[in-house]
Length: 277
Length: 267
Image 1 (tube, each protein chain N blue to C red):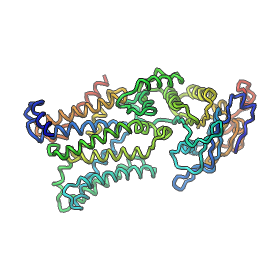
Image 2: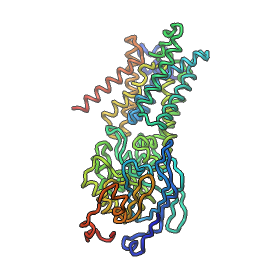
Image 3: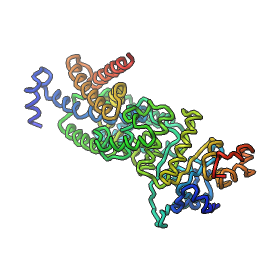
Image 4: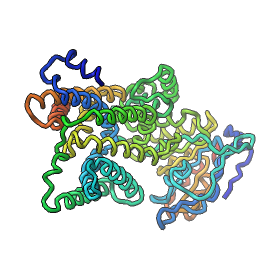
C-alpha cells in the first residue's frame, strides 16, 4: 500500500493525486469498475436490470434492520438482507406463475417502503441520505482491502462459471442437457450480484448503482461481435468512465458516483450513434 | 405398450436395434396438477420416435423430465448394445426456441465454447475448439456461420446450428423440440429429412416433439400419442387410424397417401 501511495504522485503528477482520499478513490475505481463491467455483461444478457435495481433498493431495509439492531455500520445487515431478498425472489419466481417483473416489483417496493418507514421514524431520514448518493471519497484502506478480496473472488467465479452461466442464459434446458445445475448457478449468480451491489452502495449510492452495472455492458453490446469483445469493451468502458468521472468530480466538486454514471452514459450514446450510421 | 418391431423391418432400416432407452413409470406433478402419468416407453437406436399430442399434453414436459430438469417419478434406463446399464447416457437436446436476447454479442463459436470447453469464452478460444467447431458445423452445412452472431441467424440456420450442437458429443439419445416459429414449411421438411438421415447415419435414438402431423406420418418410424398418459403407440399408420387420434387430430392420413409407393418401407 505504502508503495502505491508513493508511486501515484510520481506517476501522475497532478494536483488531484496529492490527496490521500483521492488516491484511495482512484484505487477503489480501479477495483470496482472492472467488476461491474464483468457482471454487467450477464445482467444485460439475461435482462436482469430490474433485478439488480431491486437488490440495490433493498439495501434501505438492510440499513433499517441494522439500525434497529443497534449496529454502527449496517453493512452486514444490508448484505444478509440483500442475499435473502435475492434468494426470495428466485424462490417465488420458480414456484409461482407470476411474471418475473411482477415478483421483483412486489419485493422491491415492499423492501423500499419498509426501509423508509423504519428509517423515517421521528423524522430522522436525512442522516441516511448518504446511502442514496454515496461517497466514494470516504473510502478507507480497510475498505480497499475488502474490495480487493472480493474482486479476486469474482474473477475466479467468472473464470470457472461463466461458460455454464452463458448456456443457462441461452436456454436452461439446453444447459441442463450439458450437465449444468441450473438452479444452483442462477442462485450463485444472484448472490454474487447482491454482494457486490450492496457493498458498493455506500460509495456509489443506491439511486444510481444500477446504472454502473448496466451502462458499460449496454455500451459494449452496441459494438461487440462476440463474448470476448463484449467483456473487453465493457471492462474498458467501465474503467475509463470511472477514471474520467473521478477526475471530473474532483474539479467540478460533484458527487463522484453520479459523475461516473454520466460518463458511462456518454459512452453509451457514442456507441449507439456509432452503430446507427 | 411395448412394440416389438420384426427383424425384417429392422434390417431394412439398418437398425442395430439393440441399444435401448427405457422410460419406466414416469410421472410429473406440479403443485396439485398431474401433468404426466404412467409413461412407459422403450426407445431403440436407429429409430425416430415422434411425440404428438394437443397443446398442454405434456410433450415438452416429458423431454424436460428425461433431461432431469423437472423432478419426476419413475426411472430412466439406458442399455447399450451389450445390455450394459449406463446410468448417465449422453443426451443431446434441441430446444424449441432460445430465450436469449437477440442483440447479444454471442457468436456461434462462443456457443460451442461455452458447451464444450473449460476455458471461459470471454477470455479466449483455443485453436483446437475453433477447428473442432468448424468440423461439427460442417455436418449441418453451417461452417460458414462460425463467427456470426447467434441473434443474426435465420430460423433455419439457427435450427441447423442447434442440431450440430446437440450432436457434439454424439449423444446416446437425441431429444428434439420442433421449432414453432421462424421456420417455413420447406425449412421444416428439410429439418425432418436431416433428422431422419442422422438416425441412420449415427444410429441414434431420437425423440421428436412435433406439431406437423403430415411430416410425422411421412418421416417417423414410430409415433407416440401423448395426452397426460400415453394414448396410443405404433407406426404412423396405426396411430393415425386410432379412433382417439382421429378424434383429436382429424383424419391425417388420406387414402391416397396410404398406397403411395414413394413412402417405401415404413408401410
